[in-house]
Length: 148
Image (cartoon, rainbow, N blue to C red; front, side, top):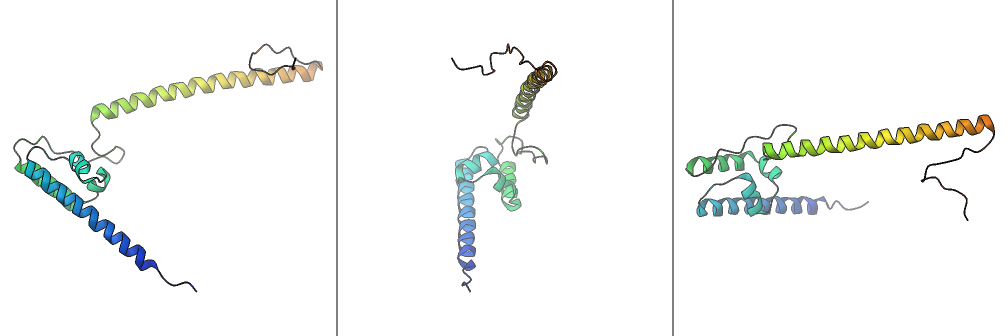
């Protein structure tokens, strides 16, 4: 039977969590001391943590909001992300992503239509070959002919 070494994983996880909190708290203090607006994005960059991690920490978000409220030069607080949007994504960014998605959908629709047409032609050629017993004269450049 193997020894239970899970305490090493638990210790490493605890140390990582403590280190992340220390970086975030230190970064928040530095940003507050420097003055100017404090945002989730700035804190994430300064602390080298993800914005999603900050959004998952209610205590840290409350401290950010307090710092924003006490700073007269701060912009409006960062809105809470909706269930289907990225944290901190601007409306312009979301609109651009939507436009790109629509372009990609159109490209895929065109590709599907072209491939369906090509498949229908191939089925038609095979049907003609079966009925006549002769190979169909292929005129499409992407078919492979005899080697010369």
